[in-house]
Length: 451
Image (cartoon, rainbow, N blue to C red):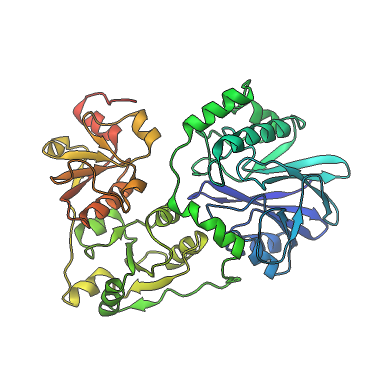
């Protein structure tokens, strides 16, 4: 039986895969930029990564296919990807001998025009299918990233139906999943087989092409700003780092202030409570957590040098990897000594008050701004609150009513603090509600509004 290992990225909501394809040989599918997890897995099982396959040009992470190719793998990509570096382009129906098993490319356009799924065959018998974004939990991946969404959505429907025509018991391995902004519908559990995918996809179950297209287009939400430029990075080829990672340089307070004055962005990755107590004026709060990379890509320009503020005990390597995986190579360094060093240099700090959701009376004098996604807002929000998705606050005008005190909220506090930091940088008086709508409703004993 073919052994396959998933390599998850919880922050992006994705999975990539390593599959044993022959005696001592392995195939990586949709690998992320850091090659070390795949190399470590292969070494632990006595395998060499001989092949790396991309299902499409990715918009949400820097592809690792080029990294693995530089380490000896043969890179397989869809024809039409437009890559500026060496690879073997495949079209639907073409097969590649992997030394034991065979890889068959299946044209599945929709999520992107060039998209391929890959059938792994033992002789003529299908073993598994890697579906990328063509068949994922909940249906298919979004169709509005690479051109007009209408025709792409119809193509996605036909591609999904073709995959659903495979044997019910065939194992499927999608790339995008729950938590991915590439998903086009609320994603459920990852289906293990084609049969499970058919029954677990409301958008596909019994729907004709017109119904499917209308429903999917109506449900498309916003997506991070970096999705617009990252495919270009993947086509050109991001700088290769191999198994090494660039160090995070230490910067004096004076040097950081000089960089900021010259246009560098300051991203404060400390926990919410630390940022609230004291931070560099004008800096953006983005607590280091699995979602850090997504919000970095939504809020910061890759053309500006990036300076970070951390506290003792936070994992510097985790932060560097999060920056690299979404294409932020222009990492200038971190404030050496943290916020204490900034203060010791005689430089001013700012603070943002925190309000406990269990004490809702403190919110009453303020306008409440909910910065969660549209679907979250519709599922339940504080009566009378206003709404603006966090991503829309970056570079946008302040929301209506932002000339007075504004209490920003999300589900827990991290996104709220990010939104508050953006508003505070524009001069708005802000506070942050720690907790979500459910915490507020429990505290006051009142129902939430919906829709």
